[in-house]
Length: 303
Image (cartoon, rainbow, N blue to C red; front, side):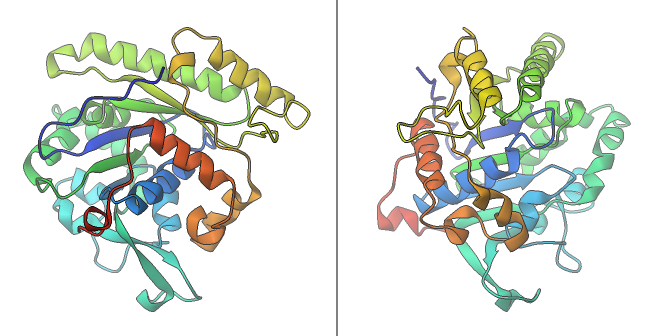
């Protein structure tokens, strides 16, 4: 049975860090499409684009930061405050880069990413208190009660940057795709978190793999892995399900869809790019499993 974390302390949002050592594990698709689903259900959601590839920012309407706009890296370095780096999430409705080319997604905000986050490991490593950068920002700059959920799209590394994120978002969602290398990455993630709990326990570090999200999975008409369409994928899911530590934490599978790959190019999350895609049913099932109910219209439209 999946373990739903208890409610966050009053005024603080429920937070999840999406991680996986190998690129292509489905972190960004998981973060963005789940974020859109939660927002649609009425949960005010903030997505942090921590990954230097900044795919989440691109997918949510920002190929580059608006001129003069702060980013997550300038918040990390202390050059800007958190609210200066946040922008409303949006999706493309026509060509061009002006605001008129996009439509805002209600209840969904974004901490804009940047390639400069590739330097974050060195920047934090040179600061004796670097691992506390995000904790300090949450404590000092996050408006009380503004968001119900925070989702962190982490890069494919397992260093100090990830540890600083999971110090704040200890309920880690390990992401895997349709190849066995992602299972190896899941093992490496588990090892990293084990070391963090040992070395950083005095900081209150208790991060763990709370859930496993598998995307790009070929499913048959009964919702089972279609071995004919992906024997290796079937082996991957079997490996996770038969692992005593992982199996109970596997979220509903998100089925394979060519539309997922198109969303990055089109700058439209799946709900706005392919609203009839069966994969959206799977994303909804993930939201259900995480314990995010649909709210009434009054709650849904709060900003």
